[in-house]
Amino acid sequence: MPASPTDTVLPMFSSPILSLKFEQFLDWLPTAGVRIVIILAVAGIVLRLIRVLTERLSPILTDIASRSAEGKKRTQTLVTVTRAFASTVVGMVTVMLILGEFGVYLAPLLAAAGIGGIALGLGAQNLVRDVISGFFLLLEDQIRVGDVVKIGDKSGNVEHIGLRILTLRDFDGSLHIIPNGTITMVTNQTKGFAYAMVTVNVSHHANVEETLALLTQIGVEFSRNPAFANDLLADVEVTGLEDFAAPRLRFTVRVKVVAGRQWHIARELRRSIKATFDTHGIKIL
Image 1 (cartoon, rainbow, N blue to C red):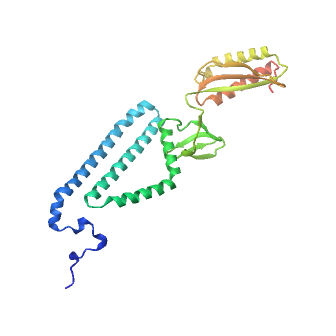
Image 2: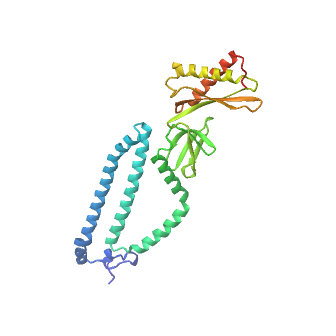
Image 3: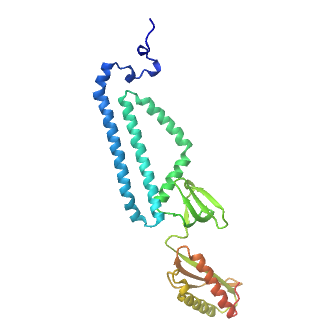
């Protein structure tokens, strides 16, 4: 008489749980079965705690970092990444514990995972480096969307900051896509405050005292101009004669301004200096 399907156990499916008889299953259920239920319950509680903690931590971090929309966006990104990482770890541990209760021998799986992890790590090390660098860019608030920065030989307005890449829009409209892992130094030109600086070159034969007096007068008038009151953080400063190598004399004028307004203020300063020097017959080289 041919064997019934229930009497046949294929070798490839011969794991302990499938080979248990009904009586053995009844013995297994109150022990390993209960432990599986407990594992799932604990995992669910931990995942719930992770969600609650990150939801409550998000507004606190936002208040500490910044109340701006970009500060909230940065904080939300960090919270989302942290929650996803923690949930992944909990999920992996839960699956491994449940497999152990089903009698699956985990040592070969862990060994294979270790070998696969090494191979994956070697192949994806640049990706991991980009993600880690992007995480710290966001965490330390080094750059924000809207900042004007210089990274290596590229500069422009930051349009997007992600965990893997950062995008800059250049003055001519070119879009630079920069992997975060390649960023070694950032020059942020619009963080906190800035200085509008103007270099003035005049003839080597010009009168130094007269030139300094005119620049000082221009600075006083410029500082009192109500059109620039919202942009200036201090009075215009004439640093003096910086260089007198023939055939020119070089003077420098600067003023502390609101971050991002230095280019506009510098243009206005140049316009004022040119108009005043033309009136007094001083030629700008």
